[in-house]
Amino acid sequence: MSELNKSRRDAVKLMLAGLAAVPVLNLVGMANAQAAELPHLDENDPTAKALKYVSDATKAARVDKAGTPAANQHCANCQFIQAAEGDWRPCTLFAGKAVNVNGWCASWTLKAG
Ligand code: SF4
Image 1: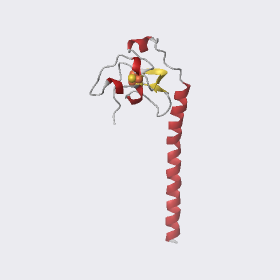
Image 2: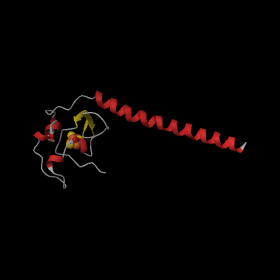
Image 3: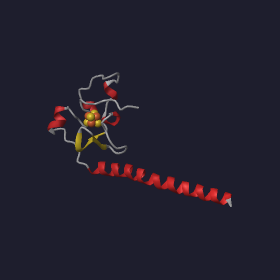
Image 4: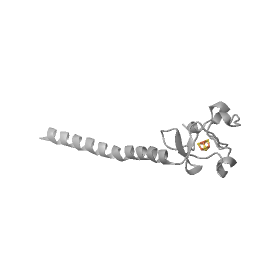
């Protein structure tokens, strides 16, 4: 009987762990889906211009920053980019817009970790 109870407890634990994982996976999926729907940041947007944003980092006047060579600086490895997938993703500096992962702006900061 106690062996049956242990199996039942183990089964309940597995079900609860599975249920807990579903919302996390849904949030990641929702963030990526929402990012895909955002309008792309226009380089002529006043804030974008002020921060010298370009959607192609090779066209930016980058300089080595905090030990990172200019050529290695782009939105994909910036601290401020959001979402895990997609060529265009939200950036905390440009609310409601998506930036290109190959872009760059003067606020570029190497992503921690
Ligand atoms: S803050 Fe970072 S992610 Fe946002 S536009 Fe500038 S370089 Fe790209």
